[in-house]
Image 1 (spheres, helix red, strand yellow):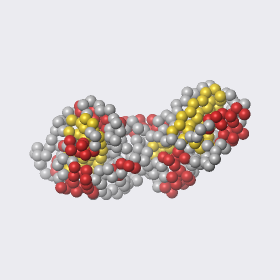
Image 2 (image 1 turned 135 degrees about the vertical axis):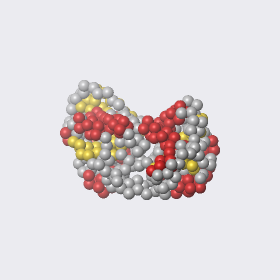
Image 3 (image 1 turned 120 degrees about the vertical axis):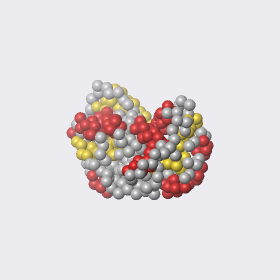
Length: 414
């Protein structure tokens, strides 16, 4: 049988041998969680490019990143002995997930932890744009007293269009409605409307109905460039626009032109196609200098509360995977939360999802005289994952036979 995956085998069980590299100023709680598990922690403040990352990952088992570090197929092929990657954020489009799966590297993220922080920033941006607060602020900083109600509006009674009704979009819907806004939403998936929100059948239908448009879609490749000149032209004149989602969704030259023409009365942007790697680096955008345009440096989820929860949540996911083989909420491998028995050893086996794999693996164990106390299996696409608790330690020879199976991607004892 031709291998569809590159087989890996790791049998590290001693926590002191596990090395973790944490990049991009992760919250200290991440280091605390992993350090308390007995892991050796190295932290770095900024992101790394491809070559730097390959060099830094030598001998590393766990990688923690945020959104700036690109974990490409080349990185994963060069450092396929990584055990797991933690994305300490919502998105995982900075990681080549198919390549990670082929290498048997589990990937975890924080899909819920910063939801409230992004929602609150969106609400703050909407109110600030509706009241033209940036324009009033700049005038006073320039020494000009310009007290006027012209162009300033309450958000109560405004219509809000949410593109993408996931964790963030749906919570924003509830909070906006509490402020008196009428909410419409559009999502490619069939989502339950919360409160009095109205579902739209198309993006065009939503744009025709609302005065404020906010994007909250995921980072899948098919969403690239979904908002450009055609969509801005379809919006109601003098609408407000927000993108706190992904930088590659929007044609920002087209947005700048829409602001200058007055088609868009205000914009708030937190994400950009090309973002500086480090704090203090130069930033440029066609939106700089435009009136009533709020630019923030990808801080939607950057609150102390959100970052603390992300550090705890993703750190715990990495710890539990190393110590117990738990893959709950992994974004790329089958998810299992196996209860720990009083067994002598646990075998975690990532393998190609083909018929008969579990039977062949169990045959190897049976020939070695191994008694299975508990076993669970889950599959996801081309990948399968079996966790087996055994009554006595498995011999190195039997482990070698399991690792040599054509279907094996990665074999660990935990």
